[in-house]
Image (tube, rainbow, N blue to C red):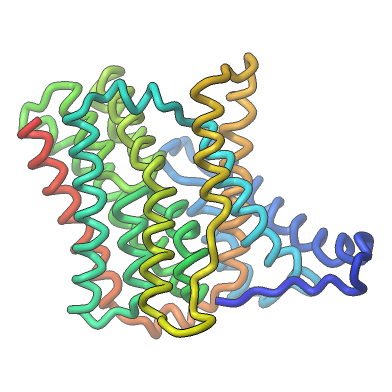
Length: 338
């Protein structure tokens, strides 16, 4: 995927602003609506990121490209996305991760890494394009839509592949949110083990919160921290995927772009671990980060042609199902052993 922002005359900030502001305003408006929808529907587990993408896809395919918005949409999909991922680091601390214990951390890492490579391998068997398979693998293994769009900075798949991958992780993550609480009760898991299972296997952060707190406050807290530990692994996984992309393309000029924003993410985690955020800052940063990510997803939707999505067929959906079953069972097996 190649996105270019035309800046007009070199060094003319006013010309750049005039080009990007309409598109930024559009994606911002969509993000604002997307954040309100779950509240109006009283469905807190519904991800505003997914709602933003659906609205964007609807506008693109029902109304068509919005005049004058292209540069701002591209800006939202690249610059704003990277900034939002950096800010995600301020939601994590090293101490939170350590509180889980070595056994739980080992389970999270093992289920994440094994799921990513299992889905990638299954994608080859099913004949799914490499880029799309890697996006589904990352979204399933790490943290849903955020992982998909972050991974695409190095995978560089088509916009339709990104939209399809997000649809996959949304569908199967929602199924997990509905079914895992029932299964956890049937299996008689205690709060800690149930929370760990949810946090290690369910796709989106919002879905984890919705499922984990059904087991009580202790399960909810344990599941949330386990899930944020998976989010922390987004940084090394993107670096690994970028290295694999570089090796796979081979030849001069074939290197995948260096995702510098990943180092910003790590720096924010370190900063948050040693410096206490001012009182009330978290109440601004968390929804603010979600808003910026929703802008990026809105931009992705605004560039997605649904006709090209249909052309992908059902094989990628089957791959998403394989990943869903794999991570659910691997995480459950690990929980029963911890």
